Image (cartoon, rainbow, N blue to C red; front, side, top):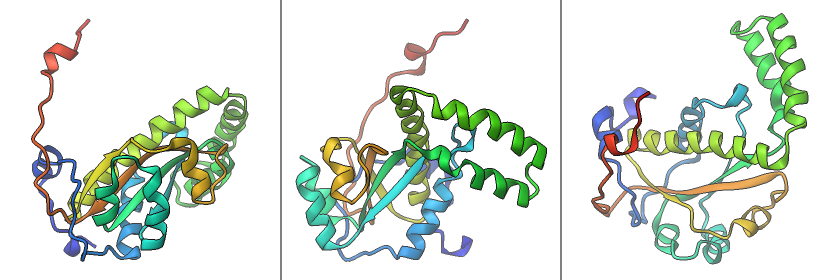
Length: 212
C-alpha cells in the first residue's frame, strides 16, 4: 500500500489540514481504498479496546439525495465529495468484546487468562453504565477515529470536512440503523479538493493550559 500513498509529510498532513467544502466531482474513491483508510483510522485508541465506531459510506447519488435534507447548510460537500462518511457510536459495542479479545489471543497479543479476567470485568461494567455514560464513551472514542481518518485521508491525497450540522435524531433511521443503538457522532465529507479552504486561527496554548 505504501507506494500508493501520496503524502507522507507529517507536518503538511497535520498542520496544513483545512476544512474543505468543494471537491472534484469527477474523482471517485474506490471501495477498496475507502476500506483501507477506515482500517488505518481504526488503529485509534478506544476505551478498553471496545472500538465503538461504526461507518456508513454514502457514495451513490441516490443515497446522497437521501442525506441532503438532513445536513442543513452542508449541501456543497454532499454534492461534490467522493463520499460522505457517517460515523456512529455503537451503544452496544461490548457485544464485540469476546471477538476482539479472542483475536488478540490468536495473534499472541494477549494471554487467554488475561482475556478471561478482563472480559469478566469489562462486559458487566459496560452493561451497567447509564445511557449518558455510554453515550459519552462511544462519542469520545469515535471522535478519535474520526480525527485519525481525516489525517489518513490526507496521507492518501484527499481532504475532508468534519460536519456537525445535521439532523442527528433522523440520521440513523434514514440509513436503516437502529437509532437507539447507533448514535450519530459526525459526518466527514471526503474527496479531492478544488478549494483552498479557509485560513483560521487558534488560541495560544498558554491561554488554554494550566500547569500544577
